[in-house]
Amino acid sequence: MNSTRDGETYCSDGNQVKKNGRYGVFCAATVNQVYDVPTGGNFELLIANEGKTKEAKYFDAKQYLPSVEIQCAGDHVNVFQASYCNGTTFCNSHLGSNLLIKRCHYSFALDFKTNGCAVVFYNETGKLHVVSPAWFDMEKSEVHHLFTSTHNGFSYDVSAAFLTFHNTTESCDSKGPRTDWQYYVLHCKFTNCDKNYTESFFNSKEFFTAFEIVDQLNYPRCENGSIELVTTDGDLQKLNVQPKTTYILALYCYLEVSFDFLKEHTYSISMRFEPIYPKPTNCTEQLTQFGANTIYYCCYAARTDKPYINPECHYSTVWTKLHGLHNENDESDNDDNNRTTGTGVYENVDDCEQRFVDQLGSSLRCTPDSKMMFHESDHPLKKVGHFIEGYDEDEKH
Image 1 (cartoon, rainbow, N blue to C red):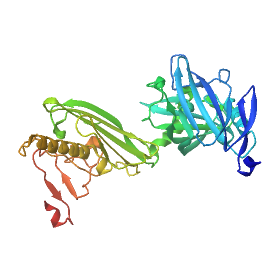
Image 2: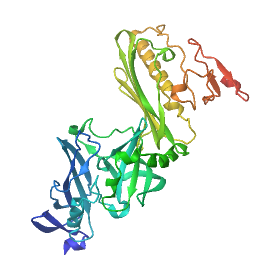
Image 3: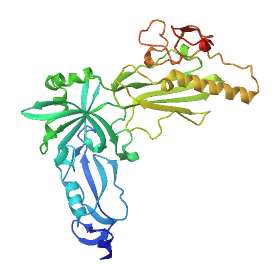
Image 4: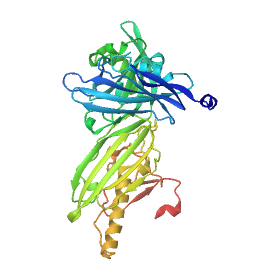
């Protein structure tokens, strides 16, 4: 009577074979779902295996702590899922039973009545690859509808997908899907319908014709790419390699620069440009561990007016800040204010693609920066500002 008065729920306690009952604030069910790895060891393309899936376990709980963890083992993958409910007597028994039923080819699809079956895929160098949705928390992910089409008389929906990844253990390192791909999701509405959508379908002329609409959409995008190099030249403009990036659909853009000051003025540089989802809790610029293995990162909301890069999140701006900090630190350590490294001039440009930095004199893809100035990259030891009409005299410095 006290438990009922306090609003607690009568929960199943035990497993499928032997169950008792007890009151709890929440009722919980945990299941070990098993997925098979196809021949060839493609861990991205997991197949739900109802026959190998373990029994559910039931218990009462004081806290609501849903979780999923993925472990890779040989030719299969274990997905450990803990789910919670309340309000209905023995609700965790029904919840556990649903988690044990295979409704789709690529997943167990608990929310089948709402979304049917889902197929995740991505585009790599003109070829589309299928990924099991088991790797992702589809309920926490965000999808934006792109188009509806039909195949063999049945309709399906394709959406741009911004996916939240499930937690994985070290056993899955380098085996699961990458975080920096642009993912899409195909939804279909009947049991096991996702079995029809294999890589051969996605790479067919029929689907590619429908999929071409994606390139024409006015949708937020981010640069995607990376660069790694070791150099003895601290001047950004003299680096032999410039980042080569592509644009992909995204909601938030992320930049990370790793800068190591090695001995004898040797610099190790690593840069990553990629979409990120969900939005980090702190999207402002961050500098960690200045000195050896310095890491700088920042992010910003993607925009439709391509090309757009937040000026404070432009790699040339970041490089200038890091190199300036290094010079200040170097001068402080040696008590020699006259020491320089000949760093030259670095461009801090608004609305320029990373790949077009160092081409300001000829590229029409760059516009004046926030101080209404163009910065010429061919003057390594001085900054020349060309003002446009309407400039402020105070900016002439």
